[in-house]
Image (cartoon, rainbow, N blue to C red):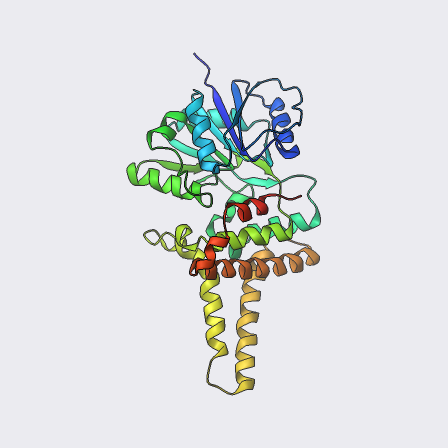
Length: 335
């Protein structure tokens, strides 16, 4: 039987040290029928170490990640495609497990969790723990650790596999957006073919570099500025979770304008804020045991939601234009 080939597509600005690390790690893949395509804005003078697989390099200028992925998929023939970010690297069984699943679920989109690098700093790990909180990533927080296999609404394009024909059949990703392109892509597929399923499995895990605190907060702000696109008003109640920070903020502001005794108002505000902290803590203690880490992550979760609400405010003003491609890409750079 003919072996199936994977085209592993990696969009990036240029050949960074993180991308080189990603490429080197693919030397360890157990399944060998694959090639890698990197799609860059521009080339630089960095030398690529010796690789034991075929590497395609495409230079396309300043384009969205969606354009780069579409271009690489169309350019080279393969049976399956796999997307991964340049600041990540795959487990050695990534392709083996992907092939086994796609052989049974050929008409499905599959993916898995992105977990931190083994050598992440304390600050970066706390940002990771914050992303695991329901009060940051909502019902999709299972994508941040090795949770149980399940069918789900959508998965991130940093760790995604599917049949190439399926990807091209529905036109690939929207090349005009750079935030939430993976969500839009899968939702559009489902509108055209309701039978398409999205399957998550911990077997398809990758290691993904975590952002520093500042970069993480910038990312949350950018996501907040895309509130309308990431909220699905025609779906089940879980899809309204992106509105939760904004609703909480509006309740808090409303309480400030209550026409009641000043001391009573302060007490009500303290009770409201304390209640929010208690339910966040109840979530954190489920997967964090160290008191120092719990307190650190609690602070970051609050900061993340404040940044997100600031982004929400930009969504409804002309200032949204400030959140252009340059600012978003800055949040991806940990230098």
